[in-house]
Image (cartoon, rainbow, N blue to C red; front, side, top):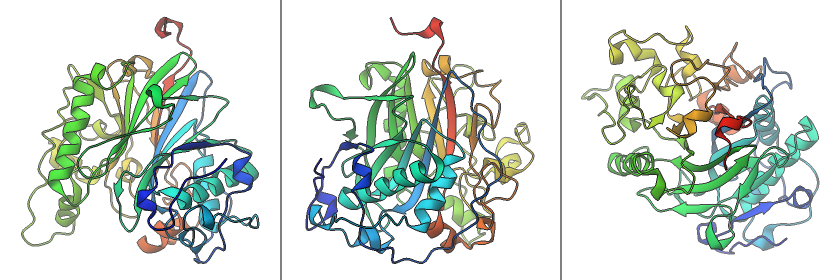
Length: 401
């Protein structure tokens, strides 16, 4: 199988392929040039999976495929060379984090597009297979827009024995770019047992408020008019939403002239008649729109929210001492029929959760990661934590005709 690429700019590459397990044996790059901090192989706790569910995760991996010399030196197909089987330390770190969940699908944001992204994803699949006996394939989207120091694409890890991607339309492709302001959405379609669903992955703008608002508007339209966005009413939207964006960090630092983050008026959540759910956010911000930090929940909700856990860090999707929840998994009213217990009965760490690889005592903690500073941890792992959720796949009452 031949990867498409370009010898000039990876941003010009429209590569969209499913790469098989056989291909993972021949994809690689030249040498691992970046020193990252290794940690012991042991970790605390794993996601307790049950049969009859599909487990879906979202993970923003900082500049994936755009840091290590092994990937940076790849330019087009000519850079894909026969190489040794060495797996970069960072890839092994990430494989350990993902193995904690043994997820059926993982949507990954901030992936370098083109050949470098394929090489990084191939190494990750090889690490999961060789080090954890977990077999995955993947889809890499076409270019979706400029990221932080990279030409960005989305990737989707999936376990072929539990889920099946479906081609989209007559193109036969397994992902489709949806044009919005800033970085585009990526659509995929899946079948897991009796549960067929459409999934949109997002990495909304961080510093550009107007682009972020337009992204929220597009997502609101998906849930308001699902038939215009999917043949199946079961829709999942997941990724890094950069909730309330850059201004939230400015206020958290106490900078002079700080203004309260503007609420997300474009995406309105009605708990009495919701057209979407987002449990890891509404668990601390019932309005979905006002509270960027779990730590400040009392200020945002006037104390009328009971957190599912005592420690705000357990609901943070970003690393270190902050308590920002930028990442989420949202789903439509129809998809909520497959959500195990509904909005108000969902159990944290059972029906949805977060992998706290950098936080001592959290699920999936990697010993030593808590000691890294912010720059070290994002290069050894990422600056975001994976979020996850599960849906029923064997409910005959909701099986498709």
